Every structure is written in structure tokens, then in C-alpha cells.
Image 1: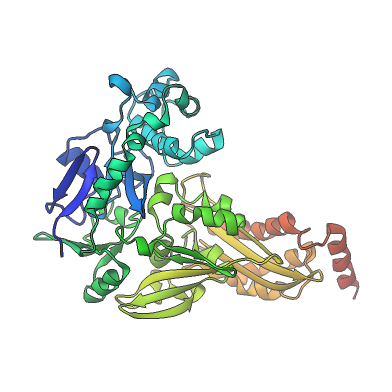
Image 2 (image 1 turned 30 degrees about the vertical axis):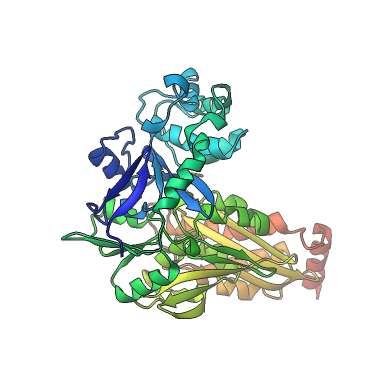
Length: 493
């Protein structure tokens, strides 16, 4: 067992045991390292002023991603490379190309948010050599500015290549050396750091994780910390002992077969994005509206499910697809339909020391019509007021099978079983849809809160069913005229 945390910070190696389980990267940078270019704006991963890059080895490849330092815990950084705004530089002491582009296009006014924008653009620059405006906007989803406006920043992002070449950048030019340095920090030892008040573990394998959790059933599992981070920064909760899963590359695996995608619980939204684009493109747009880029880089699918929130983004579409999960406790595993995992508000079918190891997502077949919708106060980086997903199979103009699931409408993510019953076997027609809409009131009794009123939620839910029909009415080889004709014949009979 190792008792010292090791990681790279810019161009120096950090090795310390003087760190708490609740110590955030933001506080470590500003208070311990006096690197104050990284700002605290919201302390909840929403504004992006604290954005830094974290690089990690994935096999022989070194990947850098933008993250929110305000909710990223230092204990999760073992074996990683943290890059802050202070490390950026150009040739011969000049500004970095991104910084120079921001200057020339007046992309900064008060300057408070500027370091975060620059670091988000830095992550983009290393991944997208010729980004369009839509790509730039996606990378900046998690950054807010209240004074400059985004147009100058987007112009600067489009102009970065005019001020420098990517191959000359430090993180690219020194990539082999950095990989070697990080490889030297990797081992298969359990990391355990303990102080008088707190303790955290960072296992090196999935088996170590399962064993450690079985021995410490009261521990808090921290994967992406996009929720647990707020428990600390906003609610001052004691979460010790903590088990960080960040070292577990075998917990981030994604496997694809002819029938399904098998996602391990530690895979982030970003990890899964390319697979979603290729195999479930109906979810591509929806997936890009989960949080901002930094949240997608940190947050995990397994954590979103295990959290059990009634407004989590992933459960409704996964339930509509018929997903199941594998729950593991020590060496024992059991499989459960995802919809049965959610029992009541704040209560899931999960025993002590049991964790979500895998999510099994059936691939929609060619004869299935599938879509998911997210309704929120603002388009990007916002929590759902209502989230709905629909999966329909139509045969001979009739609905042969249907699954409808919603979040934000009950104490848990939940299927609309009465609406499904009304539609199963009915003609795939507007009349059937309109006749089924009142049954939502039998399925759901939504609450009013600051995100939406109960009446609004119910109206949106009914309208989403109608929208789904109108967007997909002519699919599965039937024209609208044929479908209307089938509906007319049904009415006459």
C-alpha cells in the first residue's frame, strides 16, 4: 500500500501525503501552490472560471481534458498531469497563440473568466485542428462570461492557427517525455492517505475497488465528483472515507457487440460519446446537452445512475432502450433491469458495498423508432426540468411495442405505463397519440419547484409525445398518407 499521492503539476512533480479527501484542486492551486490564475466563480462546476486541463494515460496514449478544478478533488489526481493557465507560453517569451488571439479580438474585458475560456480553448486546440463555430460553442458550453459577450471569443477561437502551430506547443512537442514521466508514476499499489479527520483510497484495479468497498461499506464512492463535489463546496458535508475510482482504467471500458453496448460504470459521458455517435445517433444531440464540456469529461454514466436523481439525464433514454445494470459486491454480481433499480426518492435497490459495475444498453434495431428530449431553462449546461424518451416499434401501421420513460415527473425516473398500454396495438396515428395523452395524468403526479410548475411539466410531457409522433410519423416505410388511411379504416371499423 502506498501512502503518498503523486502527480505532475505543470512542469513539476507533486508528491504529498498532506491532503484531505475533501481538498479541491482549486484550493490546492490557489492556497498551496499560489497559482491564482485559476478562479473561483461558482464552486459548483457551472461557470468555468476554474477550468484547467488534466492529462491521463490511456494505454500508450496521453489524453488531456478540461475539468472544473472547483469540484475536482486532489485525491483523484494520482498519476495525472494538471496544466494551469500559468503554464501557457509562446515562443521566445511571447504569449501563447490562444492568448494572443484573445488579445487581438478583444475577447476579454474584466478578465475574471478569461483564464477558464483560454483553458477550454486549449483543450479544443489539441483535439480540433480546424474547428467550426458549432464545435467552438460546444467546447465553451461550460464557460460563462457576463461582460464581454461570446462573439469576440469565438472570433479568437477561429483565429488561433494564425498565431502559432500546434506541433510547437509544449504539450505536443514534449509529449513523449510527459508520457514517460506519467508512466513512472503508475503502479498497481492501493493508494491510501489518512489524516486525523479524513481518509481516502484510490485503488489501482477494479478488484481492489470491490474489495476496498466491501471492507469500508460506509465509504463515499467518488467517480466524476460532479455531484459529490457540491456536497463539499455547497453543503460542507463530511464524505470521508472516500474511494476515488480515477485510477481504474478497467472501470472505463466500453464494449460493443451486435446487440448492445456494455459500458463500465466509470466511463465518462465523453468516453461514451463516439460510441453514441456511431451506434445510437438518435442520442447524439441529447448527449451533448448533458452538462458542459468539463462536466461531460468528469461525470460518469454509472454515477448518474447510482445517484438516483429523478432528474438525471441518462436514466430515461436508457430505460426506454431496455437497459439493465450489473451490481457488484466483492466478487458477487447480480443483474437488474434499470427501471427496477429506482425504488423511491433517494432510494435505490443497492445494498451496502454494492456498486454499479456495468450498464448493458441494447442497440435499437432498424424497425424501432427512438428519440430522447431534454427540456431545461437554458439550452446548454442546465439541469432538466423534464426529460422524456420514446422507443416505438411499428408493424403494419400499428404500434407493436412501445416504451416511454420520463425524468422530472415523479420521485424516480419512471415509465408511462398507462400511456404505453393505451398505445400498444393502436394505429400509429395522430388520433391514437391524442387519445393517449390524458393517460399521462394516471402515470404521473409531478411537483412544482423552481425549475417548473406541475402544470407546465404535465403539458410538456403530453406535447413531447405529440412532437415525437410528428417527427417520426413517416418512418418504418409508411408514408403519412398510408398511416392516415390506416387510421381512417380503423375508425370506420
